[in-house]
Amino acid sequence: MLTERKDLRNIAIIAHVDHGKTTLVDGLLRQAKTFRVNQQVMERVMDSNDLERERGITILAKNTAITIPDPKTGEPVKINIVDTPGHADFGGEVERVMNMVDGVLLLVDAAEGPMPQTRFVLKKALEMGHIAIVVINKMDRKDAEPDRTLNATFDLFVELGATERQVDFPVIYTNAITQQAGATEDLGPDLQPLFQAILDFVPAPLVDMDAPLQLLVTNLSYDDYRGTTAIGRIFAGRLQTGQAVARITHEGQVLAERARYLYVYQGLEKVEVSQAEAGEIVSIAGLEGIASGETLADPAFPVALPTIHVEEPTVRMTFGVNTSPFTGRDGKWSTSRKLRERLFDELKNNVALRVDSTDAMDTFTVAGRGELHLAILIETMRREGYEFQVSRPEAIFHTGPEGELLEPFEDVDIDTSPETVGTVVEMLGSRRGKMLNMTNNPDNTVHLSYLVPTRGLLGFRYQFLTATRGMGVLNSNFNGYAPLAGPITQRSSSSIVAWETGTTVSYGLKNAEERGALFLGPGVEVYEGMVIGETQRPTDLTVNVCKKKHLTNMRSSNKDIEVRLITPRSMSLDEAIEYLAEDELLEVTPLNYRIRKRILETEERGKQTKKAREVLEEEQ
Ligand SMILES: Nc1nc2c(ncn2[C@@H]2O[C@H](COP(=O)(O)OP(=O)(O)OP(=O)(O)O)[C@@H](O)[C@H]2O)c(=O)[nH]1
Ligand SMILES: [Mg+2]
Image (tube, rainbow, N blue to C red):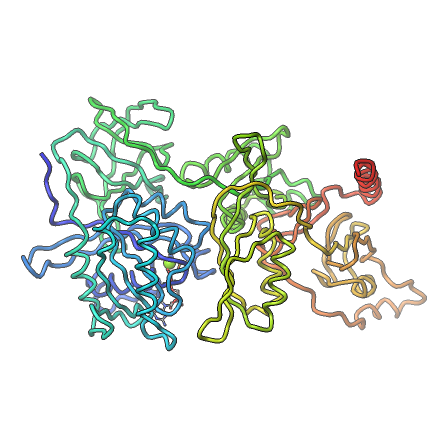
């Protein structure tokens, strides 16, 4: 028999990046009196991992819950809330939680209006049949245009094929920072109108609590005491601590397990409970080896739920054992066995990632949804003590029905100043971008819409920011696969490469500096074949940066200190990945990252380059 669980609501908060999801969750937590009086709570408390705080973005979807009284009945209602990331590369996180909830809050920045990722996340929610409450946030922005934003959002619903029920969405206006909401553009003193809308419009779970247990594992987290915890919604039946369950793997294997520790969410805490019923989102510890997308079921009726489907990766790179002369200096883990173990382990929960072995024992192909998706994995692994080397990211091609090659394309939206439009248009043109639209924004900037092959966007972000002096805004989102767009010249610059292993000295660097921009200063250990700078010449330049000025007497060794050098260009990990050319690798260790040529020996590299050039000439 189906029961409507009026005591429960399950919602996800979805939006384009930075539209204010995590800030709004702060407000919901605070006003539901989740925290003790005087409890110090940091801003955007759900962005709890180090990388999220450093980068100011949400990377992983996370659960929390609040309990509020239903004003009509006075009864408490628990609201499970899933905060999701807005960056396109983490779209898999949004897709995975869609089957945990019954409705979504779709946040839209009142000034920016719907953006590329708004479309993506709304599409996913509508496909699941969810109703959305539209929350027009950042009402305090001077350039807020709530009317225009609402109209554009409505159009988006229609365009995405929303049903009549979905198009008839409620609208709430908010300022997430001051934690105020209103059913009209006049905001009230608190978020009450939003709480009310959630209770009124998000359907309560409709479930059969007496049916055999079915739970879909949607996410994993790690607990210092209890190890891996599986998070998911109970779709049918009940679950008790200690109960025997059947774990149904992706391959359809049925394994006997026990639900040793059972929790539900309450604020930022997980609370241990002895039982939970269908409709609730729970977390279970003590299931070793469990993976996202698996079902936990009644051992007497082991029936799997449909697994989580997320879109395929579009970008890949290789992860290999570190072969630089400095290998093993900084890292705890550097063998191929460890690297392999770590990468395949990541697949248990990183639902949008793919890992494959290659012909080389010590190299793996890792595919993800974009450069940032892969960069976050790299950064996470180096912080765990891993040492490895990665290649330049490349787009993943498919073969079409007639055997033709297809490549991924992305919708690109750009806002930039009128003075830089020309440069940006030229840059995208050379990357086979097709302009779809160009309009003037009210704030005097120009908006450009493009369709660009993913191949052309790899390594583009840094160049774009440089060209727009950091003022340009670029958003991209996977559009689909289409026939190859034609050749794209990759990086136009070349590298300055160290000629020998040693420690850099100012005198040597001074010579190199005249040929381009350097990535490092004096006193840095380098090795033969390591990239130490960028030059605008058409081919790489090998220089001796460890060379001291010929010593004529004792005192001149101090002369080195007097050479004045330009401050070297420091690159973030993301920029270093973007920089890589085809014949280069990035060495990543817990303490350093170094760009290097694939072939380190100068002489050998020269021979190979010559050979490659000859082959090319023969072909033409
Ligand atoms: N002016 C103004 N700024 C806001 C408002 N809500 C959020 N912000 C700011 O917008 C920025 C992004 O906020 P977040 O809450 O991290 O946005 P998010 O949607 O969670 O971002 P991702 O999870 O990375 O997609 C922060 O600097 C917030 O302070 C608002 O109502 N008004
Ligand atoms: Mg966030």
